[in-house]
Image 1: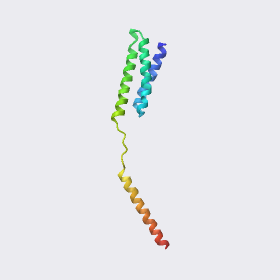
Image 2 (image 1 turned 45 degrees about the horizontal axis):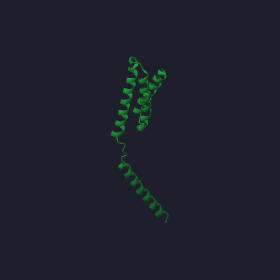
Image 3 (image 1 turned 30 degrees about the vertical axis):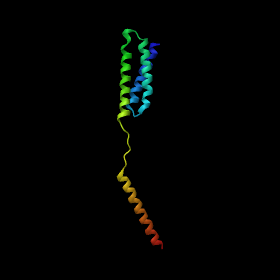
Image 4 (image 1 turned 135 degrees about the vertical axis):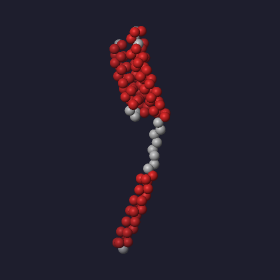
Length: 108
């Protein structure tokens, strides 16, 4: 039972670190939560001399969750208006209208 918990704890801790580094936003809390659960179960099932690995896994999970929370709360995703592009669009519309007017004059 302990070996299964060790494997699952390590797998979900690695996934938690990977998801927290990638721009997954709050989806990263899913593997972090699972890694915390398996880490706590592993901590309960371990003897006194076997508690180093669960403590390390739990520490990594806590650091990952703090990192994800910091990224979520502190980084603002803002869309900035491109003024240059808007001006180009307006100028192109004016040029297109002038060309259409010139074509109408030529046809008459």
